Image 1: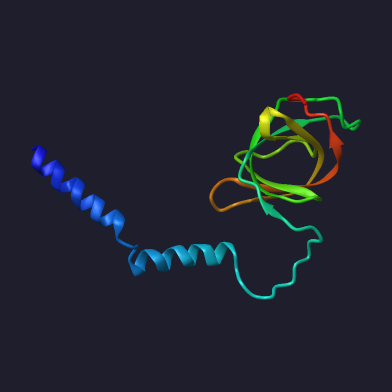
Image 2: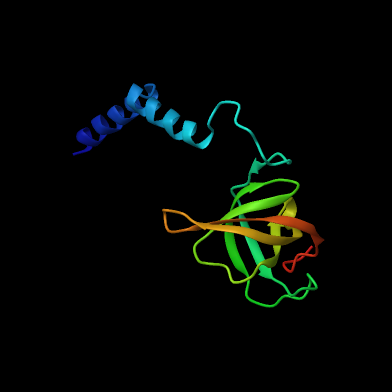
Length: 143
């Protein structure tokens, strides 16, 4: 039995050392090409967007932009810019005005008053939303 395991381990090691085959390489580049299309497409946004695959906490607030009005919701970041934020979430949002809390190094939290102005249902059963930063705000999760 141990001889068989050793032979399998050797076969796996050889496979890992070898470069990916053309089928793997082709599929990876097709995925990347769909995510990052080349060309000189016209960019409507004024601010450069950066991938932001981090968890973000949204805290609904009243019109004053400070008083929390509901339960926090954790969402998955998509992109971040100086002007706003894009994210994914599994259920519809009830609030348009939230404080988005983003965790920084050392456990610090940055808060942004966010006006969520777009939402669309994806074919994978999640929602993709985005909004504009109105101003910096204290994070309900701490400073």
